[in-house]
Figure (cartoon, rainbow, N blue to C red):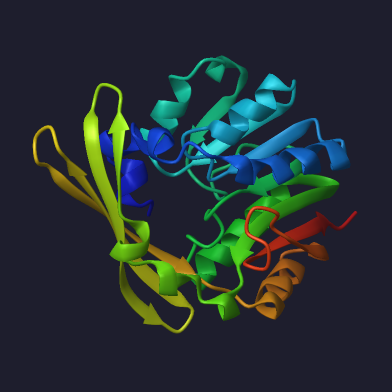
Length: 242
């Protein structure tokens, strides 16, 4: 299930404005060039920022996300007609042979159920051409990123066109083994609405991820650092076996 910040139309419509810096996507664009990918599956595409960047470069893209409200935002953007959009997940994919599958930002960690995670990787395998690549990021558990998920560290007020001031902050709810739950708060100054969005992320250790990849027929190739958060994230690269 997708979080409320993606599924509630009122929040999905504000997602890009509240997080305008997407420099985290630049390494993924470089990987598209590195692999010479001309056909990309963007899993967990959200509001379509990365899919549209790719389409603007002439890449064929299928953007897939379980949150209909986010996909609707994506479909309303300039250039959206260049992308194929699908509300669903890796178990709902049409037949294809992608050169590259991407899961940017928190997309991989938001799949918290082990059985669904394994099904996702099998779906990725089936969507890739032999020799095609998968890339995704996952936070390094030992860095304990959740310790900074506090109101004091995250509180801000954003002035959004047509909306007014929106106050946001994050609240840590629980840490239970690899599962970390937290809640985003959104307070609208114009009418006093206070909306929340609950999330849970799974913090997987590197050996666990690599074992799951192999079990799905995907060979781990390399683990890189995330340039925008050095030392904080694993960037996994894997390849479908020929």
